[in-house]
Length: 315
Image (cartoon, rainbow, N blue to C red; front, side, top):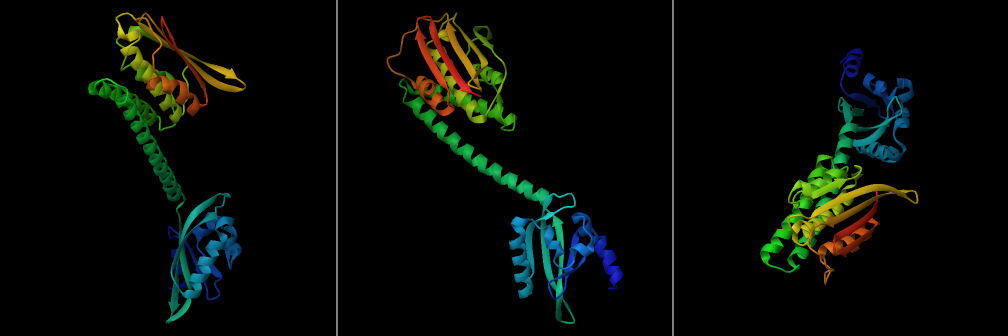
Protein backbone atom coordinates (compact mmCIF):
# COMPACT_ATOMS: atom_id res chain seq x y z
CA UNK A 1 0.00 0.00 0.00
CA UNK A 2 1.48 3.38 -0.98
CA UNK A 3 2.54 5.50 1.99
CA UNK A 4 0.15 8.32 1.22
CA UNK A 5 -2.77 5.89 0.91
CA UNK A 6 -1.89 4.27 4.26
CA UNK A 7 -1.68 7.62 5.98
CA UNK A 8 -4.98 8.71 4.43
CA UNK A 9 -6.61 5.55 5.69
CA UNK A 10 -5.05 5.87 9.15
CA UNK A 11 -5.95 9.55 9.53
CA UNK A 12 -9.60 8.81 8.77
CA UNK A 13 -9.87 5.72 10.96
CA UNK A 14 -12.20 6.02 13.98
CA UNK A 15 -9.37 4.96 16.32
CA UNK A 16 -5.97 6.27 17.35
CA UNK A 17 -3.15 4.45 15.51
CA UNK A 18 0.57 4.31 16.18
CA UNK A 19 3.53 2.42 14.70
CA UNK A 20 6.91 1.47 16.15
CA UNK A 21 10.06 0.25 14.40
CA UNK A 22 12.62 -2.37 15.39
CA UNK A 23 14.15 -0.06 18.00
CA UNK A 24 10.82 0.19 19.89
CA UNK A 25 10.62 3.89 19.02
CA UNK A 26 7.36 5.11 17.57
CA UNK A 27 7.65 6.57 14.08
CA UNK A 28 4.02 7.27 13.20
CA UNK A 29 0.85 8.60 14.85
CA UNK A 30 -2.36 9.20 12.99
CA UNK A 31 -4.44 12.34 13.14
CA UNK A 32 -6.96 11.10 15.77
CA UNK A 33 -4.04 10.42 18.16
CA UNK A 34 -2.56 13.88 17.64
CA UNK A 35 -5.96 15.53 18.00
CA UNK A 36 -6.53 13.65 21.24
CA UNK A 37 -3.19 14.60 22.81
CA UNK A 38 -3.02 18.07 21.28
CA UNK A 39 0.66 17.54 20.44
CA UNK A 40 2.57 17.52 17.19
CA UNK A 41 3.85 14.33 15.64
CA UNK A 42 7.40 15.49 16.31
CA UNK A 43 6.62 15.74 20.03
CA UNK A 44 5.17 12.23 20.09
CA UNK A 45 7.79 10.45 18.02
CA UNK A 46 10.28 8.09 19.66
CA UNK A 47 9.22 7.81 23.30
CA UNK A 48 7.69 11.27 23.46
CA UNK A 49 4.20 9.78 23.55
CA UNK A 50 4.97 8.29 26.99
CA UNK A 51 5.13 11.81 28.47
CA UNK A 52 1.34 11.85 28.32
CA UNK A 53 0.88 8.63 30.29
CA UNK A 54 -0.38 9.10 33.84
CA UNK A 55 2.50 8.85 36.37
CA UNK A 56 0.70 6.06 38.24
CA UNK A 57 0.42 4.00 35.03
CA UNK A 58 3.78 4.86 33.48
CA UNK A 59 5.97 2.00 34.78
CA UNK A 60 3.32 -0.66 34.20
CA UNK A 61 2.60 0.65 30.69
CA UNK A 62 6.26 0.61 29.61
CA UNK A 63 6.88 -2.79 31.21
CA UNK A 64 4.07 -4.34 29.18
CA UNK A 65 5.17 -2.56 26.02
CA UNK A 66 8.85 -3.52 26.29
CA UNK A 67 8.33 -7.13 27.44
CA UNK A 68 5.75 -7.78 24.72
CA UNK A 69 7.99 -6.19 22.11
CA UNK A 70 10.98 -8.33 23.10
CA UNK A 71 8.85 -11.49 23.01
CA UNK A 72 7.10 -10.51 19.76
CA UNK A 73 3.72 -10.96 21.46
CA UNK A 74 0.44 -9.15 21.03
CA UNK A 75 -0.60 -7.06 24.02
CA UNK A 76 -3.63 -5.25 25.33
CA UNK A 77 -3.34 -2.77 28.16
CA UNK A 78 -5.31 0.00 29.79
CA UNK A 79 -3.73 3.24 30.99
CA UNK A 80 -4.59 6.87 31.43
CA UNK A 81 -3.42 9.25 28.72
CA UNK A 82 -3.46 13.03 29.02
CA UNK A 83 -5.92 14.63 26.65
CA UNK A 84 -5.36 18.01 24.98
CA UNK A 85 -7.29 19.76 27.78
CA UNK A 86 -5.12 18.25 30.51
CA UNK A 87 -7.66 15.64 31.59
CA UNK A 88 -6.44 12.06 31.89
CA UNK A 89 -8.66 9.55 30.10
CA UNK A 90 -8.55 5.76 30.24
CA UNK A 91 -7.28 4.29 26.97
CA UNK A 92 -7.37 0.69 25.70
CA UNK A 93 -4.18 0.13 23.70
CA UNK A 94 -3.84 -2.99 21.53
CA UNK A 95 -0.47 -3.71 19.95
CA UNK A 96 0.49 -6.39 17.46
CA UNK A 97 3.82 -7.23 15.75
CA UNK A 98 3.95 -7.00 11.95
CA UNK A 99 6.32 -8.62 9.46
CA UNK A 100 7.77 -7.76 6.05
CA UNK A 101 8.90 -10.63 3.86
CA UNK A 102 8.78 -12.92 6.87
CA UNK A 103 11.01 -10.70 9.01
CA UNK A 104 9.85 -8.86 12.12
CA UNK A 105 9.47 -5.18 11.26
CA UNK A 106 7.91 -3.59 14.35
CA UNK A 107 4.49 -3.01 15.91
CA UNK A 108 1.20 -1.49 14.93
CA UNK A 109 -1.15 -0.33 17.65
CA UNK A 110 -4.67 1.01 17.93
CA UNK A 111 -6.19 2.86 20.87
CA UNK A 112 -9.73 3.73 21.87
CA UNK A 113 -11.03 5.96 24.65
CA UNK A 114 -12.76 3.72 27.22
CA UNK A 115 -12.98 6.28 30.00
CA UNK A 116 -16.78 6.41 30.11
CA UNK A 117 -17.04 2.62 30.08
CA UNK A 118 -14.37 2.36 32.78
CA UNK A 119 -16.15 4.89 34.95
CA UNK A 120 -19.44 3.03 34.49
CA UNK A 121 -17.80 -0.28 35.44
CA UNK A 122 -16.29 1.26 38.56
CA UNK A 123 -19.64 2.77 39.48
CA UNK A 124 -21.36 -0.58 38.99
CA UNK A 125 -18.74 -2.28 41.18
CA UNK A 126 -19.34 0.27 43.92
CA UNK A 127 -23.10 -0.10 43.59
CA UNK A 128 -22.89 -3.90 43.84
CA UNK A 129 -20.68 -3.61 46.93
CA UNK A 130 -23.08 -1.09 48.47
CA UNK A 131 -26.05 -3.31 47.62
CA UNK A 132 -24.38 -6.31 49.26
CA UNK A 133 -23.70 -4.21 52.34
CA UNK A 134 -27.30 -3.02 52.52
CA UNK A 135 -28.70 -6.52 51.99
CA UNK A 136 -26.57 -7.83 54.85
CA UNK A 137 -27.72 -4.98 57.09
CA UNK A 138 -31.31 -5.54 56.06
CA UNK A 139 -31.16 -9.25 56.83
CA UNK A 140 -29.60 -8.52 60.21
CA UNK A 141 -32.35 -6.00 60.95
CA UNK A 142 -35.09 -8.41 59.88
CA UNK A 143 -33.55 -11.14 62.02
CA UNK A 144 -33.54 -8.81 65.03
CA UNK A 145 -37.15 -7.74 64.39
CA UNK A 146 -38.28 -11.35 64.05
CA UNK A 147 -36.51 -12.34 67.26
CA UNK A 148 -37.98 -9.44 69.21
CA UNK A 149 -41.48 -9.96 67.79
CA UNK A 150 -41.53 -13.67 68.62
CA UNK A 151 -40.09 -13.20 72.11
CA UNK A 152 -42.46 -10.47 73.14
CA UNK A 153 -45.08 -12.78 74.61
CA UNK A 154 -48.66 -13.25 73.48
CA UNK A 155 -50.05 -15.55 70.87
CA UNK A 156 -48.46 -16.52 67.60
CA UNK A 157 -51.02 -14.37 65.80
CA UNK A 158 -50.05 -11.32 67.86
CA UNK A 159 -46.37 -11.96 67.16
CA UNK A 160 -47.11 -12.24 63.46
CA UNK A 161 -49.01 -8.96 63.52
CA UNK A 162 -46.18 -7.15 65.31
CA UNK A 163 -43.59 -8.53 62.93
CA UNK A 164 -45.69 -7.62 59.88
CA UNK A 165 -46.12 -4.06 61.12
CA UNK A 166 -42.38 -3.67 61.72
CA UNK A 167 -41.50 -5.11 58.36
CA UNK A 168 -44.03 -2.80 56.72
CA UNK A 169 -42.27 0.21 58.27
CA UNK A 170 -38.94 -1.08 57.06
CA UNK A 171 -40.37 -1.65 53.59
CA UNK A 172 -41.83 1.85 53.48
CA UNK A 173 -38.56 3.59 54.36
CA UNK A 174 -36.73 1.52 51.75
CA UNK A 175 -39.36 2.50 49.19
CA UNK A 176 -38.84 6.18 50.03
CA UNK A 177 -35.06 5.84 49.85
CA UNK A 178 -35.19 3.95 46.57
CA UNK A 179 -37.35 6.70 45.10
CA UNK A 180 -34.61 9.19 45.94
CA UNK A 181 -31.78 7.05 44.60
CA UNK A 182 -30.68 6.15 48.13
CA UNK A 183 -29.49 9.71 48.68
CA UNK A 184 -31.83 10.31 51.61
CA UNK A 185 -35.46 10.59 52.64
CA UNK A 186 -37.71 13.52 53.52
CA UNK A 187 -38.61 13.32 57.20
CA UNK A 188 -42.15 14.73 56.88
CA UNK A 189 -43.12 12.06 54.35
CA UNK A 190 -41.41 9.40 56.44
CA UNK A 191 -43.48 10.32 59.50
CA UNK A 192 -46.74 10.31 57.55
CA UNK A 193 -46.05 7.01 55.79
CA UNK A 194 -44.87 5.05 58.84
CA UNK A 195 -47.70 6.19 61.12
CA UNK A 196 -50.42 5.78 58.49
CA UNK A 197 -50.59 2.00 59.07
CA UNK A 198 -51.53 2.45 62.74
CA UNK A 199 -53.52 5.66 63.16
CA UNK A 200 -57.28 4.90 63.20
CA UNK A 201 -58.31 8.16 61.51
CA UNK A 202 -56.38 11.13 60.14
CA UNK A 203 -57.91 13.55 62.68
CA UNK A 204 -56.34 11.58 65.52
CA UNK A 205 -52.79 12.54 64.60
CA UNK A 206 -51.12 15.93 64.34
CA UNK A 207 -47.82 16.23 62.49
CA UNK A 208 -45.73 19.37 62.16
CA UNK A 209 -42.19 20.51 61.64
CA UNK A 210 -39.73 21.62 58.97
CA UNK A 211 -38.96 19.09 56.27
CA UNK A 212 -35.41 17.83 56.29
CA UNK A 213 -33.59 15.05 54.49
CA UNK A 214 -32.15 12.16 56.46
CA UNK A 215 -29.34 9.84 55.48
CA UNK A 216 -30.47 6.26 54.73
CA UNK A 217 -29.26 4.71 58.01
CA UNK A 218 -30.80 7.49 60.10
CA UNK A 219 -34.09 7.30 58.20
CA UNK A 220 -34.31 3.54 58.78
CA UNK A 221 -33.66 3.86 62.52
CA UNK A 222 -36.23 6.62 62.97
CA UNK A 223 -38.78 4.67 60.93
CA UNK A 224 -38.46 1.73 63.33
CA UNK A 225 -38.74 4.07 66.34
CA UNK A 226 -41.88 5.70 64.98
CA UNK A 227 -43.38 2.30 64.20
CA UNK A 228 -42.74 1.09 67.77
CA UNK A 229 -44.39 4.19 69.21
CA UNK A 230 -47.29 3.74 66.79
CA UNK A 231 -47.76 0.08 67.75
CA UNK A 232 -47.72 0.94 71.45
CA UNK A 233 -50.24 3.74 70.89
CA UNK A 234 -52.53 1.37 68.97
CA UNK A 235 -52.32 -1.48 71.49
CA UNK A 236 -52.16 0.32 74.82
CA UNK A 237 -52.05 4.09 74.34
CA UNK A 238 -53.89 6.96 72.72
CA UNK A 239 -55.13 5.01 69.71
CA UNK A 240 -56.44 2.08 71.74
CA UNK A 241 -59.68 3.92 72.54
CA UNK A 242 -62.06 6.04 70.49
CA UNK A 243 -60.82 9.50 71.49
CA UNK A 244 -57.06 9.55 72.04
CA UNK A 245 -54.72 11.57 69.85
CA UNK A 246 -51.02 11.71 69.05
CA UNK A 247 -49.04 14.81 68.19
CA UNK A 248 -45.63 14.59 66.53
CA UNK A 249 -43.69 17.81 66.32
CA UNK A 250 -40.06 18.53 65.61
CA UNK A 251 -37.69 21.41 65.02
CA UNK A 252 -34.09 22.00 64.00
CA UNK A 253 -31.90 23.34 66.78
CA UNK A 254 -28.29 24.51 66.85
CA UNK A 255 -26.23 22.94 69.63
CA UNK A 256 -22.51 23.58 69.91
CA UNK A 257 -22.24 24.43 66.24
CA UNK A 258 -24.15 21.35 65.06
CA UNK A 259 -27.71 20.98 63.78
CA UNK A 260 -30.01 18.64 65.71
CA UNK A 261 -33.44 17.24 64.98
CA UNK A 262 -35.46 17.61 68.19
CA UNK A 263 -38.63 15.52 68.03
CA UNK A 264 -41.49 15.15 70.51
CA UNK A 265 -44.09 12.36 70.44
CA UNK A 266 -46.98 13.17 72.79
CA UNK A 267 -50.12 11.12 73.43
CA UNK A 268 -53.30 12.45 75.03
CA UNK A 269 -56.88 11.34 75.59
CA UNK A 270 -56.08 7.66 75.85
CA UNK A 271 -56.57 5.31 78.77
CA UNK A 272 -54.52 5.98 81.96
CA UNK A 273 -50.89 5.02 81.49
CA UNK A 274 -48.76 3.08 83.95
CA UNK A 275 -45.01 2.46 83.92
CA UNK A 276 -44.53 -1.01 82.41
CA UNK A 277 -43.02 -3.71 84.64
CA UNK A 278 -40.45 -4.55 81.96
CA UNK A 279 -39.10 -2.76 78.96
CA UNK A 280 -40.33 -4.00 75.61
CA UNK A 281 -38.54 -3.86 72.30
CA UNK A 282 -39.80 -0.35 71.56
CA UNK A 283 -38.50 1.06 74.83
CA UNK A 284 -35.11 -0.55 74.40
CA UNK A 285 -34.92 0.70 70.83
CA UNK A 286 -35.65 4.29 71.86
CA UNK A 287 -33.61 4.43 75.06
CA UNK A 288 -30.64 2.25 74.13
CA UNK A 289 -30.18 1.60 70.41
CA UNK A 290 -31.19 5.01 69.11
CA UNK A 291 -28.69 7.08 71.16
CA UNK A 292 -25.95 4.51 70.59
CA UNK A 293 -26.41 4.22 66.83
CA UNK A 294 -27.29 7.82 66.01
CA UNK A 295 -25.12 9.63 68.60
CA UNK A 296 -28.09 11.48 70.02
CA UNK A 297 -30.23 11.40 73.14
CA UNK A 298 -33.71 10.17 73.97
CA UNK A 299 -36.20 10.08 76.82
CA UNK A 300 -39.40 8.09 77.29
CA UNK A 301 -41.99 9.03 79.95
CA UNK A 302 -45.06 7.00 80.92
CA UNK A 303 -47.15 9.74 82.52
CA UNK A 304 -50.79 9.03 83.53
CA UNK A 305 -52.05 11.38 80.79
CA UNK A 306 -50.17 9.61 78.04
CA UNK A 307 -46.81 8.47 76.76
CA UNK A 308 -44.31 11.15 75.77
CA UNK A 309 -41.03 10.60 73.96
CA UNK A 310 -38.28 13.11 73.25
CA UNK A 311 -35.57 12.41 70.68
CA UNK A 312 -32.63 14.58 69.72
CA UNK A 313 -30.36 13.50 66.84
CA UNK A 314 -27.62 15.27 64.89
CA UNK A 315 -28.52 15.85 61.24
